[in-house]
Image (cartoon, rainbow, N blue to C red; front, top):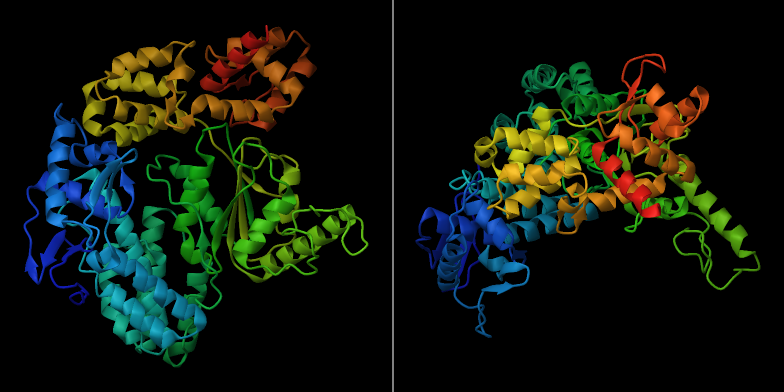
Length: 633
């Protein structure tokens, strides 16, 4: 499928390849790379070129389950061997591998590593395509693909760390192959991509964009029956594996092919209208949430539902679920997928105008009526009035113009917008589609945003025990998990099966390899110490709980402080809430329901009377609330 790579290597220089088995050549001769563990270290450094790689990352790659006491010394030996192999950087004779505060950093140029050359060629090819020079784009993308010799690092994938890097590289190669195949079809040369697409679909059967490109190339080659069979096979696979249907765009393509026969040249997947993707990386350790993910994927693929709210307590994995869905739905939204946070880094809410300004920039929306002195429609006019108009009036006018332009863009494009960590309805109400249209919006919020209607709501509860243990095992290794399964279960339950807390516990244990699981479980079982333990680097569960606490109204904070004691013992009934709040039934119901709306209390999933309901507060939020009450006394 892939031709031998063209390697622009200066005489005497070493050229490394990751897009296939790990290899190194000098002047056409292969170089020995040493034993397996040494090659894993080298592959990990090469996979993150010109970037510090921590000792912990290297240790996990080489010894995923149980590193020896001599691990650091062994790593130093392997890095020393890499230095010898790589030599100096050239004229200044500096070491290529240096150790700093962030870890080991490997300095290497584009002409010495195939992944850097691949990235450069892919960027140039996409730029040529955006200029409309499709022949140059096809040539540059093909040159990039000629560097791809098979599954990246396929000889070292038994290392979990290397396997993750390899999957990332392979995803990048697949995207470039899809770009190239679509351009070849636009140029009328779809037959050139048929065989390669068939091989890739065999290896990645659920990747819809590959299927669409294969359908188009087959159809353009006059092989209509085979093109239709590609769709039928995919539809059956999706139904069997995920309970889903192909995207509306792919279904429409199928109908066009079915109805018009081989004289029609079908669309090629919306390259001309696509505006790209602005999404954070897909969650690396996404676990569980299978039903919620299936529900969200089905919802966003439907024609009559365009807004979804994913709600849940702080740390419940709302953003991870939304991003997982967004990454899986790339082929359903040809005009792009975009993520915008609705809060600043300090947790305060951004203004709607600020969020709208970022959306307009990402999506290429032209905002009419810009006024000198107004920055991006954010509502501020430095220096007072502009053009004789009061500053406040100018801000409102520009904001309204931007909102109208945004609504027009939504009505004309099929894009997916993720608005993350929404504090309240007012922050996003003007950004949602005013009428049914091709775009979809996913909101994540701690509260349920009851003032927004009509929207589809997905409320996240704690993970099931098995899901939480699966997540913990991904972080500390299944072998270590099996050493004391009872203690592992105590850990995830002490975390309230909250994904963030389980993740932090896993990261702590991955660093503290000497710490028995039972001892860490004892620490988390101690109410006075649990939040102190749940810190990994700059990620703090207490800080996340504090942010959720600040979102609550003052009355809700006082009520939650009173409910925290009895609720921590496993939940609370309405009678228990009345006793804790020292109020009557109606007042207790209103208070508990206010906390449910805010995402601080979870309610039963089925219909029950208020007296029969059993309400729960996440354990860690209870601990934080008790801290605040104690500090105020």
